Length: 170
Image (cartoon, rainbow, N blue to C red; front, side, top):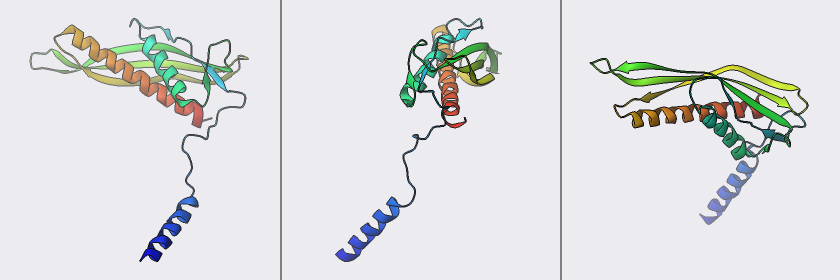
């Protein structure tokens, strides 16, 4: 019985070694010469004050956590990812029986441009948009907190999507 157990373990070890497993996330398709990136504060062209902060932070966080390119200041970077928040809309989507809004949908539209330090445009993403829903409350602090959480969720998701494009779609 011990012999069969050893034989099985040896067979399993050989099988695992030769089946093509590899570390995920190490292969990239970043253009040659790009080893660092700067993400300056996004431009806010909306009437929503401070919306540029969670978007800039979301994009910085994605590249810092990934660590395949170094996040540095504009003067040191091989590439620069600039964002413009073009549109921010809120619309009510559900109501209680008396007609008071219970839930809102927030939609953000951004433009992104990735350029080399030389000024050469690597890619442009126009009108990237996404939406999130959030519950409202009679308490304005709760409603504003829910709206801020929806905006942060949008920023994280859109940043993740663009980071994936940066590394895999060139």
